[in-house]
Length: 117
Ligand SMILES: [Zn+2]
Image (cartoon, rainbow, N blue to C red; front, top):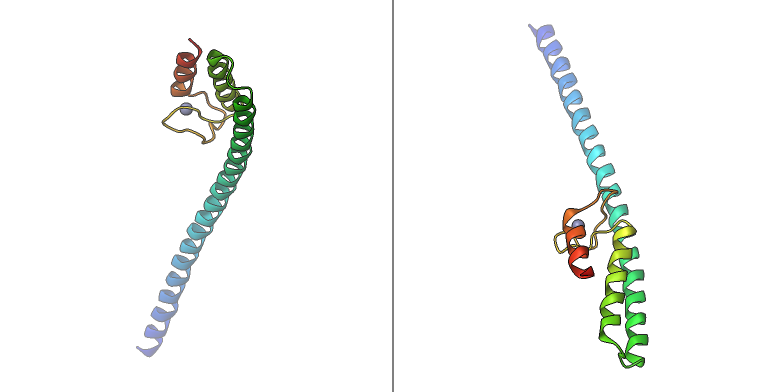
Protein backbone atom coordinates (compact mmCIF):
# COMPACT_ATOMS: atom_id res chain seq x y z
CA UNK A 1 0.00 0.00 0.00
CA UNK A 2 2.77 2.34 0.95
CA UNK A 3 4.76 1.36 -2.18
CA UNK A 4 1.72 1.95 -4.35
CA UNK A 5 1.28 5.47 -2.97
CA UNK A 6 4.92 6.19 -3.61
CA UNK A 7 4.62 5.14 -7.26
CA UNK A 8 1.50 7.28 -7.62
CA UNK A 9 3.37 10.26 -6.24
CA UNK A 10 6.25 9.72 -8.68
CA UNK A 11 3.87 9.49 -11.64
CA UNK A 12 1.95 12.53 -10.53
CA UNK A 13 5.19 14.41 -10.23
CA UNK A 14 6.19 13.33 -13.71
CA UNK A 15 2.89 14.61 -15.11
CA UNK A 16 3.38 17.91 -13.35
CA UNK A 17 6.85 18.22 -14.86
CA UNK A 18 5.50 17.50 -18.33
CA UNK A 19 2.75 20.04 -17.91
CA UNK A 20 5.26 22.61 -16.67
CA UNK A 21 7.51 21.92 -19.62
CA UNK A 22 4.60 22.48 -22.00
CA UNK A 23 3.80 25.75 -20.26
CA UNK A 24 7.45 26.74 -20.47
CA UNK A 25 7.55 26.07 -24.23
CA UNK A 26 4.39 28.15 -24.71
CA UNK A 27 5.89 30.95 -22.62
CA UNK A 28 9.11 30.84 -24.62
CA UNK A 29 7.15 31.10 -27.89
CA UNK A 30 5.19 34.00 -26.48
CA UNK A 31 8.37 35.85 -25.49
CA UNK A 32 9.94 35.21 -28.90
CA UNK A 33 6.79 36.56 -30.58
CA UNK A 34 6.78 39.64 -28.37
CA UNK A 35 10.46 40.32 -29.06
CA UNK A 36 9.84 40.05 -32.79
CA UNK A 37 6.90 42.43 -32.55
CA UNK A 38 8.94 44.80 -30.41
CA UNK A 39 11.68 44.82 -33.05
CA UNK A 40 9.17 45.53 -35.84
CA UNK A 41 7.60 48.37 -33.90
CA UNK A 42 11.00 49.89 -33.10
CA UNK A 43 11.99 49.77 -36.77
CA UNK A 44 8.68 51.34 -37.80
CA UNK A 45 9.00 53.98 -35.12
CA UNK A 46 12.52 54.91 -36.21
CA UNK A 47 11.43 55.03 -39.84
CA UNK A 48 8.43 57.23 -39.04
CA UNK A 49 10.55 59.58 -36.92
CA UNK A 50 13.02 60.02 -39.77
CA UNK A 51 10.14 60.57 -42.19
CA UNK A 52 8.49 63.08 -39.89
CA UNK A 53 11.73 65.05 -39.53
CA UNK A 54 12.10 65.07 -43.30
CA UNK A 55 8.52 66.20 -43.81
CA UNK A 56 8.85 68.92 -41.16
CA UNK A 57 12.10 70.23 -42.66
CA UNK A 58 10.48 70.19 -46.14
CA UNK A 59 7.54 72.15 -44.73
CA UNK A 60 10.00 74.64 -43.30
CA UNK A 61 11.56 75.15 -46.74
CA UNK A 62 8.13 75.48 -48.37
CA UNK A 63 7.00 78.12 -45.89
CA UNK A 64 10.18 80.08 -46.61
CA UNK A 65 9.31 80.04 -50.28
CA UNK A 66 5.95 81.52 -49.25
CA UNK A 67 3.99 78.85 -51.06
CA UNK A 68 4.25 80.15 -54.62
CA UNK A 69 2.02 77.45 -56.02
CA UNK A 70 -0.52 75.51 -54.00
CA UNK A 71 -0.74 72.68 -56.54
CA UNK A 72 2.98 72.07 -55.96
CA UNK A 73 2.28 71.39 -52.27
CA UNK A 74 -0.33 68.78 -53.09
CA UNK A 75 2.10 67.15 -55.51
CA UNK A 76 4.83 66.99 -52.87
CA UNK A 77 2.44 65.58 -50.30
CA UNK A 78 1.41 62.91 -52.75
CA UNK A 79 5.04 62.09 -53.59
CA UNK A 80 5.87 61.67 -49.91
CA UNK A 81 2.93 59.33 -49.36
CA UNK A 82 3.68 57.38 -52.53
CA UNK A 83 7.31 57.04 -51.45
CA UNK A 84 6.26 55.88 -47.99
CA UNK A 85 3.99 53.30 -49.61
CA UNK A 86 6.75 52.05 -51.90
CA UNK A 87 9.10 51.77 -48.92
CA UNK A 88 6.63 49.20 -47.58
CA UNK A 89 4.37 51.19 -45.26
CA UNK A 90 0.64 51.78 -45.17
CA UNK A 91 -0.57 55.29 -46.03
CA UNK A 92 -4.29 54.43 -45.74
CA UNK A 93 -6.33 55.59 -42.75
CA UNK A 94 -6.93 52.00 -41.71
CA UNK A 95 -3.28 51.01 -41.05
CA UNK A 96 -1.36 54.28 -41.47
CA UNK A 97 2.36 53.98 -40.75
CA UNK A 98 2.44 50.25 -40.12
CA UNK A 99 4.42 47.81 -42.26
CA UNK A 100 2.66 46.33 -45.31
CA UNK A 101 4.77 43.18 -44.83
CA UNK A 102 5.38 43.03 -48.57
CA UNK A 103 1.69 42.91 -49.45
CA UNK A 104 -0.22 45.43 -51.54
CA UNK A 105 -3.05 47.19 -49.76
CA UNK A 106 -6.24 48.11 -51.61
CA UNK A 107 -7.04 50.90 -49.14
CA UNK A 108 -3.62 52.46 -49.76
CA UNK A 109 -3.86 52.08 -53.53
CA UNK A 110 -7.31 53.63 -53.79
CA UNK A 111 -6.20 56.40 -51.42
CA UNK A 112 -3.15 57.14 -53.58
CA UNK A 113 -5.29 57.03 -56.73
CA UNK A 114 -7.69 59.58 -55.27
CA UNK A 115 -4.80 61.85 -54.27
CA UNK A 116 -3.28 61.66 -57.74
CA UNK A 117 -6.39 62.85 -59.64
ZN1 LIG B 1 -3.02 50.25 -46.35
